[in-house]
Structures are given as structure tokens and as C-alpha cells.
Length: 208
Image (cartoon, rainbow, N blue to C red; front, side, top):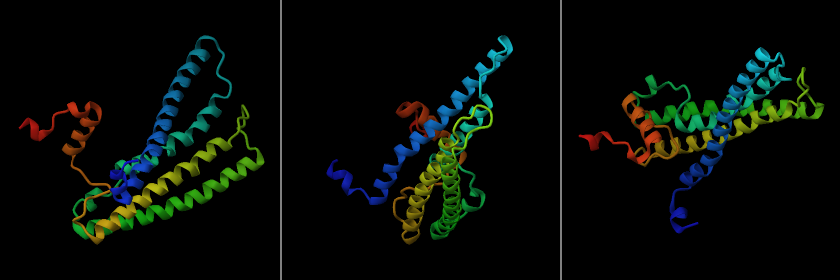
């Protein structure tokens, strides 16, 4: 690790530390969706042509829901892809903007903390009782474990965004770190182009 890394603000280092975990969780969720699509195709083919459906197909679909629904939450939070009140927040500037972000993040932290508590309880109960699915009797606890894990990662991302918002509330002139910056449609489209094409994408100012 270089000296340059240590000279970076602590918030930026924490932000970058969380990124690989969020990316991996999001990739796992995308992989679960893809595998479920493949499984669905096999189910249709086997059932239609050979009258031999996959054993426990419905159970596998139910168990995969947790990964698809929750593992990408922290990644979406980082990218600002969750539903946001940008129609209102987008009109705010300076300390008013970051005060609104602080309030919204605190509410989200409270809700996610409650979800972590109760989902962890459901996991422990399922693991202790040896809970299984009804049809194929697959163990349920691995799927239920993903929920508090995903919410915990989301909670950490919200903490970094709260830290970043408080930092900018105290001094709005600082460089934004680990916060969501509202962008218009053109900027969002340009960012998506750069994500797909990389540095080969032409910036609007370069085209002028």
C-alpha cells in the first residue's frame, strides 16, 4: 500500500473498501437472476417435451428471491439508483440540500437497522429448527442468511453516505465523497455510455 493511499481522506478509503463487496453482492444477484432464467427454460422444455419437470423447481425459485431482491441494495444505494425524491431535493442547494440528505439517510438507517434485527432473528430461528421447503425439503436458512447480510452491507453504505453528507453540510465547498449527486437526464445517459464504452466514449465538450 502506497503513501498516496494513506494520504487520501478516511471517508474515501472506507468508500473504496466497501465497493468490492457491493460489486460482488450485486454480481451474485445478477447471476441468480440469470440462473433462474436458465432454470425456467429447462423446466419448460423438460415438462413440455419429456413430462419430467425439475424436482423442487418452485422451491428453488422461492429460495432465490432473497438474493435477487436484497443483494443489490447496497450497490444501488451507492449509485443513487433507488427511488429518490429528486423533484424536491434537486431544487435544494448548499446546506439545505445536505440537511435533507442527512434526514433521509437517518430515516433509512433506522428502517434498515430494524430490518437487520428482525431478519437475523428469522435466520437464527430457521437455522435452529432446521426449517426446510415444503416440497423438496431444501434447507431455508442459507436464503434467510442472505437477508441480514445484504441489509448489513446496505447499512454500512448508508453510514458512509451519512458521513459524507454531514461533511458537506459543515462545509459545502468540500469535494463530495460517498454521496449521491443528482444528475439530469443528459448526464445520466453520458455516464451510462462511458460505463459501457469506457474511455473511448466521446465527451460532449470534446465533440464541440
